[in-house]
Amino acid sequence: MTAPGARIALGEVVAPQGLDGSLRVYPSMDAPQRLVKMGTVFLEPPGQPAQARRVLAVRVQGELVILRLEGVEDRTAAERLRGARLWVPPAALPPLPEGEYYWFQLIGLRVRDRKTGGVVGTVVHVLRTRGVHDVLEVQLDQGGSALVPALKAVIPRVDLAAGELEVDPLPGLWEAGRPGGEEE
Image (cartoon, rainbow, N blue to C red; front, side, top):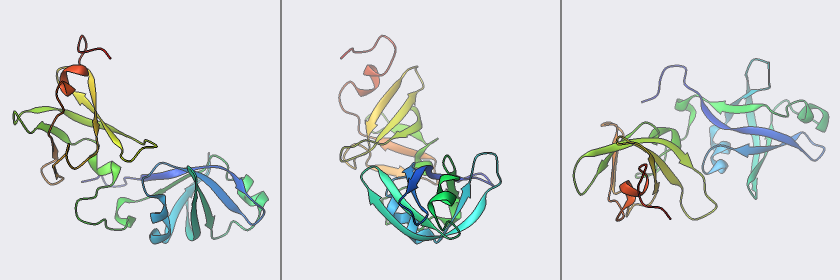
């Protein structure tokens, strides 16, 4: 559950794209093509209040998203938005298929070891990778942190209502992340 007034970061405008007002956006969300389903996003230029803008077009280009927003008609207008942040309230996000989660939903979940049944830590960050899957950073209760691949075989259960997920740890996973643990 998210706090009232919570904002879900979608990305940051890094540059204009072309002459038609398109924006190059570095996404801070997985599956940025979902932006088009949101319909409206909040655009917050540095030092200015946020404004709701209708999404006109979205395309993914490498690691960036090329985004057209209502009211941004030319390169000059797009240039003024460099550094602007894009966000939505959590309720604006489209529903996901069963078994899929938004990153913000995972942060703060307690991590339970499937083998021992005990809680070992808390998810503090989701790392984007260029690989097939993301990685959860878990702050361990005993100190240190561990990186857990976001794979169904490793994370067989996520229970948002209970505020926890279950990890079937690879051998040595928890020990490697603790101070004085295994070195690579």
